[in-house]
Image (tube, rainbow, N blue to C red; front, side):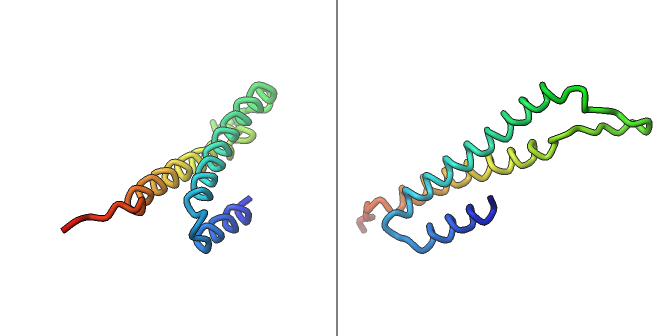
Length: 99
C-alpha cells in the first residue's frame, strides 16, 4: 500500500498537466481508505467481541487496534492533500495580479 501511494505521489510530481486531477484523486483515495479502516475496525469489533481481553496486570489486548491510528493518519493526509490542492489551485488558476 505504501509503495502504491509513493508511486502515485511521484507521478503527481512529474506530470504537470494532470497534476491537480491526480492530487484530487489521491486525496479522495486516502480519505476513503481511512474511512474504510474505521469501518473495518467497527465490523471486527462486533464479530471479535469475545477476543478482547484484559490481562491480570490490567492491560487491554484489543485485536485490530492498529486500524485506528492508520485510519487517522490516512484521513488527516487526505485532508491535507485536499487543502494543498485547493490552495495551490487558487494561486495557479491563471489570475495575474496587476501592478
